[in-house]
Length: 322
Image (cartoon, rainbow, N blue to C red):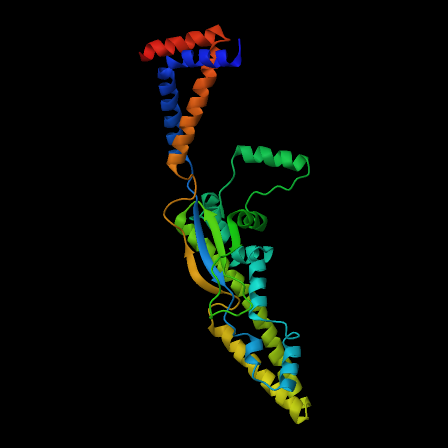
């Protein structure tokens, strides 16, 4: 029998099996709808960020004389600190263990992320079940670490999986430095819409605070150094340079205290649409279910030619649907 004959024979047999196709399609679509209803929802909160406005020490010292500017640059770390440098550092901090530690200790983010395991009434982690005990014993026997409660490693893993950063197609405006190439989109996925927005807001704020705190410590140390060195300097040009540098550091200290954000600009705050990102559109699932039903129908008809019991079952289904 040629391939054409087999195709014609299959078509003849399949023509009278439409009831089986209808039954399979109904079952597959019903199952897909149930799975869609039971599937956990995941929401994605996103924010648009950019480099800070040019208010760092380089700008503050930009109007000084050349000799003053040279001294100031040496005291400010070689003159390489720009707004874009702070912003690039900010993007790196978003992925750091240091940020995870801050979020865990200062914002208690572990209790938010793993809320199902946290007993808020008694302020403690809920005890694990018997399966956890068995797995822990097995891990202990083979030398793997055993953890009864979440720690910073778990939070870092959560951020690695949930947090995404990507360059935005939006071009910078005059509010930003000319060295900035683009804004950045930062998104975070979580099972609750409002919590996703809250976590992302904490992540963006604390990353900025880390860089601000580092700069605040540096500025404080420079002010102490300048106050100590000022009485020792007699040359007028050097004294003027130190005074200008001191003034710049005091202005920078004021900005560090007053500005809400230091290393970044929040263009668009975190927002999560009401439509979940997962499980996605139910239409797509229904179409996939219909396609799977059609393939199953064709496979059953083809196999029924080789297996008599299967053909008997299909015949019974067709008669029951008649």
